[in-house]
Length: 231
Image (cartoon, rainbow, N blue to C red; front, top):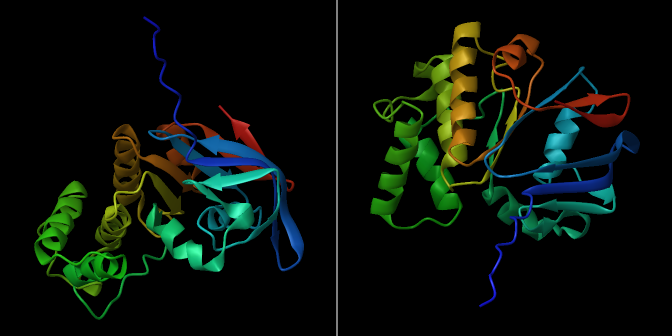
C-alpha cells in the first residue's frame, strides 16, 4: 500500500521580486518574502523607509504594478481587480495605530457594524461572535461603552477584537503600540504574540526596538529601498 504524504500549506503571503511604487516613486524594489500561519514577524525601519507602503500593498491599499509573484490569501495581487479588494480584506485582520473606531456608537455597535458589512445576518450568531472576540481580548464587560470612555489601551484591544471578527489567518498590525504607554504596549504585544501561538500569522510594524528585544521574533527591515530579513 502506498503512503500518502500531506502537502505543505501554501504561504499566506508570498512575494517574489515585487516593486512597490507610490506617487510614481519606487519605495521598495525586489521585495521577496513569505509568511506562514502561526508565525509572528516584526517589520522595522526608519520613517519613510516603506513599512506602511508594504503593509498597505498586502491588503490592496497600494497597488503592485510589477513583480514575479505577489500572492496574499489566495489572491494574485498582480491581477487583483478593484471589486475583489473588499473580499481580500475580509480575510485579513488590520490593527491601526489610530484605532479608527466609530466614536458615535458603543463597542458592541462598532463590532456589529463590521459583521453586518461583511455579510453576517443572524442576530444570535452576531451576538455570539462579538462576545467571543471581546472575551479573547479581555473586554467582554465593556461592550456598552463608547470609545471615548475607554483608555488608549482598551481602545486598541477593541481594535484587535474587531480585527478578529471574521477569523482571519493573517493579522496586519501597523504601529499598534505607537500611541500607548509602555506598560499598555507590553500588554498589546503580548496579546499579539498569543494570537500567533494560536495559529494566526501576525506581521507587526514598529519603531519600538525595546519591545522587539523583549519579545523576540524574526525581523524584516526596510532599508535603502530594500527589504532585509534578520533572525
